[in-house]
Image 1 (cartoon, helix red, strand yellow):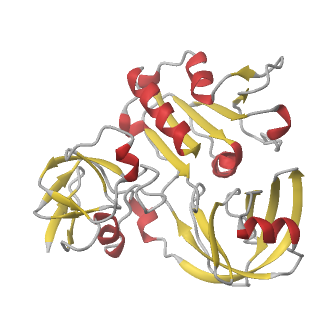
Image 2 (spheres, one colour):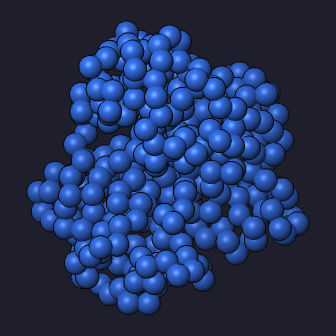
Length: 324
C-alpha cells in the first residue's frame, strides 16, 4: 500500500493494483472524475512528487500533452507514495451510490432528436445527489449515463434529456418503445461536476447539445441562494431548432448567449461556444467556468481559456463520451 497526498493535506492509502480514483472513493473521498475510463480528462491531476503506473489507457492524454507530471487518476496506480496537485471535494464524497428501481413518469419529445424523460422513484428511497451529477439508466443489460437535469425536488422526480443516437440500444427503446409507468433501474449519483464556492467574480456555464442538462440543474440550485457573482449561460448547437429548451430564470439574474455553429442568425453568436465566451471579454483570471458537452469542445475550450488567463482549478467539466 502507498499513500496518496492531496494538496489540501488530505491523504489516503492505495494499492499498486488499484486506481487512485477507486481508492479515494473507497475512503469516502471525492476527487474530480466523470467517465472513469480515461476518455474525458475530468480527473486530470498534476504530480508534485512520486511515481505511478498506468493500469487503464489514458486515452485523453494521448491527444493532449502526456507526461508523468500529468496523470488521470482513474487510470493510474501508485508505485510509491505520491503527492498530487488536487483537492478533495468535501461532503460530495459522503453521497452513497445506490441502485434503485424507477418508473417513467412522463415522456416528452422536445425536438426531433431529444426526449425529456421524468423518472418517479419509490417512496422513501432516500436518493440524494448534488446538482450536476449523473446516473446510469439501466434497462435489462443496457446501461447508459445521463446527467440529471433538475435540482433535487420534494417529490424526488429526476429529469433526463436523451438524444436520439443512431443504432443506440437505449435510444431505440426510449424513442420507439417506452411508455408511461415502464419499470427501469438506475445507479447513482455519479460524477463530481458541481458548483464550487470560490473567490471568482464571474460564473460561465457553457454547454453544447444535451450538455445543457446539468447546467439547467445548476441554475435551478441557485434559486433562493444566488451566488454574488455575474452569471453567464452559453449554450450552443448547430442550428436554431437544436436549442430545444427554454431554460427559464425565475429569481435568477443571468445573461444568456445562444450559439449556432452552422447557421448565421440575428440574435445568436455564430461560431463555437468557447469563442462566444471569449467574445464576452471577461477577465478570465476572475472567472470560473463550468463546461459540459463533447470531449472535443471541452479540450479546445480549456486550452483556449488557460491561454487567456483562466486558472486551471477554475475550470470544471463534464465531457459526454460515446458508450461505444
